[in-house]
Structures are given as C-alpha cells and as structure tokens.
Length: 401
Ligand code: HEC
Ligand code: HEC
Image 1 (tube, helix red, strand yellow):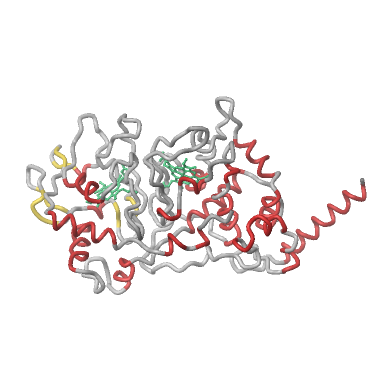
Image 2: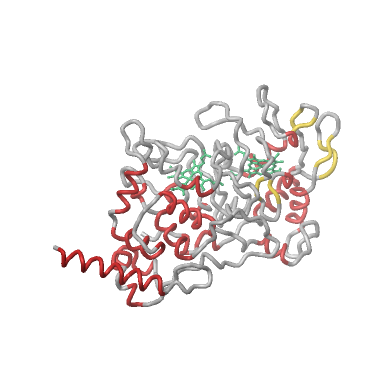
C-alpha cells in the first residue's frame, strides 16, 4: 500500500518536473515538446487521435490580424496555445451538460459562424433557448466588453460558464432537483483526458470554474475572421472612405451607404447621406457601439416585449459561403438580408419603447431611410464582402471528438 502510494507520488513528481522544465516558451505558455512526456498523455491520444497533438499545438496565440484592427477586449487573459486547446475540448464536450447531450458547439456551429439556424436552439431535456444563439466571430475585437444580447455578462470569462448553469441549455443549474456546477467539476475531475489536459496546461489536475472560464474565453477569442473581400480592399486603401479597388461599383456604393450618416427632413425622412449603420456597427471591426440602445426589434421568441437588447455580434460573417447565417437578431425574426434592411428602412416607434436608440428616431418619429431598391441591393452587396472563409473550415476551431 505504502509502496504503491510512493510510486504514484513519484510518477507525479516526474510529470510535473518534465512539464515545468519545458516551460521555456516565449509567451509563458506551457510548450511541451518532449515525446517522452506526451507518451504519458495516453487518454488524450486515445480520445482525440491526431486531432489534438500536444507536441505540436495549433496556433491560437500568434494569429495574424490586419494592422487596422485595434479594438481588443483580451485584458489579462492572453491567449496561449495550451489553454485555447483545452478550451476547444471543453467547448465541444457534451459532458458539460447534465445528460451528456449538449455541448457549446451544439448551438454555436462552425459552419454557421458559430451561430445556429434554429430560431430557438434545443438544450437539455426538452429545453430551448429563450433568445436566438449569437454568432461567435471576432468576439475579441470589440470595444464592448459585456456579453449576451442584453450585455448582462460583465466579461467573456464570466459569460462562458453561464450556459452550463442555465436550466434549459446545459442544465447544471442547481435548481428544480438538478445538480449545480460543483457536480460538474467533480465529474470532469474523473475523466482521464481532463486529468491529462489540466496537468499539461496548469501543472496539476484540478478542474475549477475559473480555469474553465479562462480556457473557454481564450478559445472563443481565438475565433477570428479577417480573410474577407473587405479586408483585401481595406488593406489596399488608406481608409474606409476611399473606393476599394477590388470592389464592384455596387459594393463601393453599399460601403458608402453603410458608413454615411443620413440627413433627415422634419418628417424623419432621409433626404441625403447614407443609412447610418456604421454609427453602431463600426468599421473595420464592425463591433457594436457600447452606447447603442435597442434598434427597434423588440419582440421575443416567446411573443413578449424585450426592450433590453443593446448588443450585436460583429457584422462580419453575416453570410457564409452557402447563404445567410440566418435567422438574424435576438428574436431570429429575419431570414433575409432584405427584410433586415427593411426594418431599418422604416423603424417603428412602438409606444412603450423607452430604450430605442435616438439615432434611429427623429423628432419622436422612427427613421425612414427611403432607400431605393438599388440602394438596398448595394448595402447587401457590401455586407456580403464582410465574410471570410477560414472561419468555416479551419480544423483548429472544429470538433475534436
Ligand atoms: C442551447 C444552446 C446554447 C448552448 C449549449 C450554448 N450557448 Fe452560448 N449562446 C446561446 C444563446 C441563445 C445566446 C444568447 C443568449 C442571450 O443573450 O440571452 C448565447 C450567447 C453566447 C455568448 C455571447 C456572445 C456575445 O457576443 O455576446 C457566448 C460567448 C457564448 N454563448 C458562449 C457559449 C459557451 C462557452 C457555451 C458552452 C459552455 C455555450 N455558449 C453554450 C446558445 C447556447
Ligand atoms: C442605433 C444603433 C444601430 C444602428 C444605426 C444600426 N444597428 Fe444593426 N443592430 C443594432 C443592435 C442593438 C442590434 C441587435 C438587435 C437585436 O438583436 O434585436 C443590431 C443587429 C443587427 C443585425 C443582426 C446581427 C445578428 O447577428 O443577428 C444586422 C444584420 C444589422 N444590425 C445590420 C444593420 C444595418 C445594415 C444597419 C444600417 C442600415 C444597422 N444595422 C444600423 C444597432 C444598430
């Protein structure tokens, strides 16, 4: 008995010693390159095969991004390849739900820019989300540091373990007879590949909520998309105001309409200028203005009124290579870009909406952009230039199970 304990202790010391010896990486990341160490991570190899290679981690930490991208909400939790890799495993692991049926990736699907095609996404045990699933693209590159449609999460780290504790989504709510998150931590502690991954990343096998948040947030922040037609044009131009050499006339006109502010007459009808989109969805990140209030889409999936939605994901990758990443908005109310622009073309000031953004109203009236069919097409053509391709195909963001 004593001998066995001593042996176990000795082998732990060996693993820790080897892992800490290899802590030579430039980013403070635990870069383990010795093949002899990795042979010990047999559960990881058995479970993930060559989809996760601890001797040759995917690049999350040093991805290139264009020089004009300046907004960044990373804060102290800098991306490392090791933690983002663990974040990827957590993101796609159905063990994070009470009945092993739902992972983050069940709703946040790579082929739809990490959003979903259902208006309400199915969670555990017959549950459904009360709002439409948000796309997770360039979540890192925005000035707004609060998350969810209504910005109720004060940081991305805090956000990441909320779905786990949501009764309908992943079910570790600690309510109505369901276990809470401490039960999940114990559960993960008993899974071999997590022992190995936490050992690899942190130097010990302890699973904590804070570590899960750190790793999930790093994985999400790593999901970036800058290989769009817009980026090609923007790189070749001094700013967004100039026509882009690689754009069609329609795309350039759409860009001008997206960015330009409208001039209204006394009736709130646009008589000059653009459609004003950029006031809230700001190029080149196309992140939401932190001061935005609601945009007049105040329905909800349940059919009630929701005045609290003031955040939007980046408007990059609204379309995927095959079609629109629809439905759009928190209520999933629009399936076509035409309908979405139709909303902004004639904003209704609904009685009781005391949170409508004043930029969409004029003298108490909702804006009327009076867009011509050609102008609508031009804005759509421009929005289509904001999509990349690697987002949908890069294996480092795919399901490793
Ligand atoms: C059952 C579907 C479902 C699952 C599972 C799910 N999400 Fe979500 N996610 C949503 C919905 C719906 C929203 C928007 C909810 C709201 O705003 O009220 C959302 C919002 C988010 C956001 C906010 C994005 C932003 O820009 O503000 C992040 C980040 C996120 N989810 C990450 C995760 C992570 C991490 C997991 C797994 C631990 C996860 N989600 C599991 C449906 C889901
Ligand atoms: C006053 C700020 C504001 C202006 C101006 C504005 N938006 Fe929005 N936009 C928002 C907010 C807030 C949301 C989230 C609303 C919701 O889900 O109900 C949003 C959501 C969207 C969405 C859906 C995103 C998604 O992931 O589902 C699209 C697309 C969009 N806006 C495009 C536009 C276009 C095009 C224009 C110009 C014609 C525009 N917006 C003008 C604030 C604004």
